[in-house]
Length: 587
Image 1: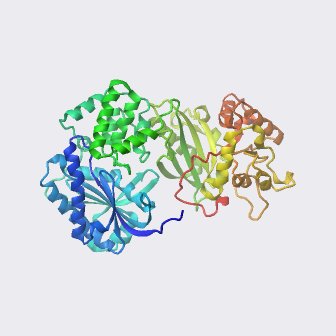
Image 2 (image 1 turned 90 degrees about the vertical axis):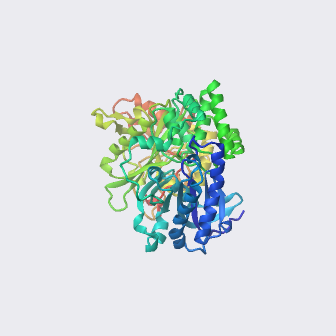
Image 3 (image 1 turned 90 degrees about the horizontal axis):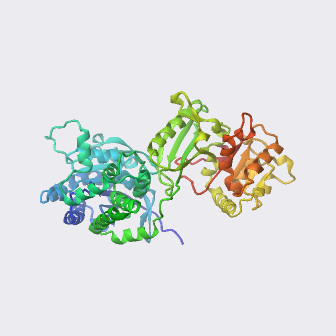
C-alpha cells in the first residue's frame, strides 16, 4: 500500500487543564467538552482562520487542530493567544468554578501525512509531548492566567523569534522530557491579572493545585478506598497507566500516585491516566474494593464517552507477570571530539510489558568516570524499584571502541566505601550500538533471533572466528542460517581496517547473529570448552547469560569465566536513538 503524500501544516494541540478534577461532575465535564469547541471556534475565527476548514481530531479533554499552510504562522502566534484568553474569559464568566476552563496550547509545524485513522507523523507526536511538559503544567497551575502557550523550539526559532510583534522576549525556555523525547520548548502564560500580588508558591499550593480536596461524596469515597491499598507493584501500575510516557517517580502510597496522575494528560485514547490507574488497581486488589473501583472507573469513562474504548482495552490488556523482569539499558557513545569522553544515556524499565521506556537522561562524562556515573543511575533506579519483587538485567549498548571496557568487573555503591560487583545482583549483558544504529541489519537479526528461540542447540554457535583459518571468508561462513552465535578467537578490533578483509565481529553483526563471545586472553580450545559447558544445559544457548553469571559467582580468582564477554543482543528491545551514525562500522 502506497503512503499518502506529506502535507505541511501548522500543528496546534490543546488540553483542558485539570479536566479529571473530582470536583467536576458529569454535567460539568459535558459542558467543558462542548465549551472547549465553542472557545476554539470563536478564537480561530477572531484570528481569521475558518475553524471548520481545519483538520481536527477530538482527544477527550483536548484536541488536535491542523491549520492550513496558507495561513501565516506569525499571525497565528501573534493573535491566537489573545483571542483564546478573551473567549475563555467570556465562557468562564457564566460558569461555576467546577466548569471553568484553563488551556495548555502547544504549537509546532512540520510535514505530516493522513492515513485511514487520522494524521500521523513525528511533528504531531512532538506537539502532544509538549502538552505534557511538567514545567508548563506547574506554571499554569500556580498562575491566575488561563492559557499556557508552549512553542516547540523549531516554531519559536523560525516564527516567534523572527517577529517582534509576537513578543519573543516574553517566552522562557523550559526543559521537556516525555517518553523518548528529551529537549526544550518555550513557554508564555497569557491572561494573568497584573494587579494580583505574587508570592512564592508553597508545597501546600502544589497539593491543592494537583487535586483540590473538594467535599464531594464521590471523591471522599474514592479517597477512602485508595488509602487502604498497598501493592509492591505500584511503579508498574503507574507506568502502565501512563503508557510509559513519563519517568515514574517514587510514590509513598497509592493515593499519592493517583493525585499525581490526576493532572497528567490523556493519551490518544482519551482516557485519563488516573482513570486507567484505578482500573489496574481493581485488577490488582480484587474483592469488594475492586467492585467499588471498577464502578468508579465505569462512571468516569461514561462521562468522557469512552466506554467502548475501555471495553476494547480490557479485551487485549495483558496481565502483569507473576515473576516480572526489568531492564536498565545504558547507551555509551564516544564523544565526537574528545576520545577520552563519552555520551551516556539510559532507559529504565518500570513495567515489564512496556518497551521502550522513556529516556532517563543524557550525560557527558569522562571514560574514567563512566563506572561511577553508571553507579549513580543504578542507585537511583533501585530507589524507584524498592517496593518491587522483580529481577533486573543491566544492558550496556556500547560503541565498538568501548567493547573492551571491563563491565563485568564494575561495581555499584562506590560512595559507601564498600563497592559491590554488579554481577552479584544483576545479569549483565553487552549489546552492540553499532547494530542498533544500522537498521539495514535488523531484518536478518530478527530472523536469527527467532531461529535461536526455536532451536537453541549449542552446536549452532560457530567455533572459529578468525578469517585466516578458513578457506572461505568469515562473512560467507556465517551467512549459513544454521549459525546463531559465534565464538571469536580474539577480541574484536576497536576500529576495523578500511578496505581490509571482513573481520569476525562485523561479519557476525551483519549476518544477524544475536550471540557473540570472546575472551581477552584464553586459548581458543579452552574458550570453546568453556562456552560449550555454559550452553550445554537444558536451555542451550538461551541459558548463556544466566549461566555465565552463575559460573562467575562461584569462580576462583583467575577463572576464565570472569573475563568471558557475552554479547547478547535481543532485537525485541530496540531504541530509536536521536543521533544516527553515518558510518556504523566505524563506531
